[in-house]
Image 1 (cartoon, rainbow over the protein chains, first blue to last red):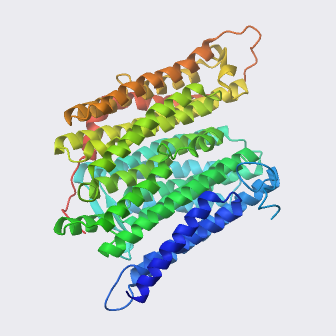
Image 2: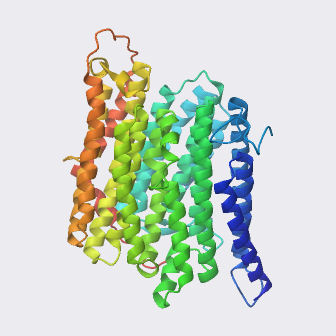
Image 3: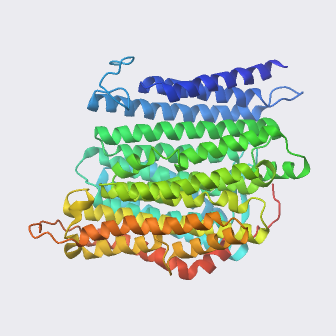
Length: 106
Length: 489
């Protein structure tokens, strides 16, 4: 067990938490946060899993950097869409009633 | 020569995306015409080059793997590049007339359209797992933007649902990529195959393959993960629906198929292959059944996409542990199915857009009498339907014929039943639309006539889908071309 493997395991836990949130929460902003948590988990696994004797592997770090850019772009797009949707429909969740119980106005 | 072709293919869409971001709708349309011309020429040139000299690996900017981007230019990839050029230019030309130029936010159609095109090219040519991820995300984000172009609350709801599904699918795929890299220390598909050939497989990469295929199946809207597709494809503007159904869902399937054909034999197992096949069959039956019950015209076409996507996943059982000739037959059948569905479904969505524009309502029963006023568009819709129902001589028929042979040849007769049932059900939902449009109701003769160019474009696509059956030999022979230099990476 090395410290980097510990990162990978923490990443797996974060993935689980994020997945649960993405599937079970109804408020759209919470879903988006859950997506970001899950994304961080994947990035942690990506840098933590490759094990080398000579020190950290630079390739996954470059990949994660790109991955973060993609995740930011996706998050920005989602925030714009959610905000617009809230202004047009008054709802902050996809399913149902206006201003869902846990959500309310932003 | 090749350098210029590759540069043109990859650089033009990105440059045009930035250019059109600066213009209004009308100027964006003019700039796009030039770009479409360039793309069509470059795609044709690349296809001819590969048809003559065989495929090759191409290091972008001279930087090799792992940090550089390595592109895999083979027969299958250039076939899809050419297909993209055909379908996307048709949709772009149609959209220039169809989309209302007076709404200020519609000018964003052009940059999104070009970003989508560049992402598609990146996916067809991608040779390593991470760049495929970046291409996929580029496609998803621009496709979501295109759906949201409708602007009202329903379009936004559909696009948010689409975005969440697409992001979850991408993360599952990326998690699989992380596991693959952790295990093998390489991201190149060819590199992983080399490693697998020389070592015995363990459990870890099997999980990675399962994660990646699941994520991609979610993005391809395989039953039972298809719920996001009909609202998004149904509510988007017709040229956008055509792009999404014809090309966007195919991109994620293409990656899943490439992964399965490369890793499936060593990492997959019979149960998983059969399970994917059964989900595809369920999609064919359930999607067609729901298509029969929709009241909105575009929802019928969207559920028909769910059904047609189901056929594609028969690739998994038909290529696992069968003889090479049957596997090749199945691969050829699936490729033809991808191409013919792309052409036919794009034609169908564009024609459906014309019909809706003409009668002013999106309901199936509002089509009454349209056969007298818009026979040309209805005829395009019908021709595209011939390919979807897989009647001879269409490309759909050639595809189903190859799949039928592969399923009987490998002793998996149950897939043949699915092919037959799917064909009958697709006839059922298509004839429902014809019946509605040939009904005569005396008091309706208020029809809007769309311009001629709107009517011609779907006809051209439908004729291409129909004609594919005649040229399938040639298409398949380019697809099967070997690499010029063996085992480059």
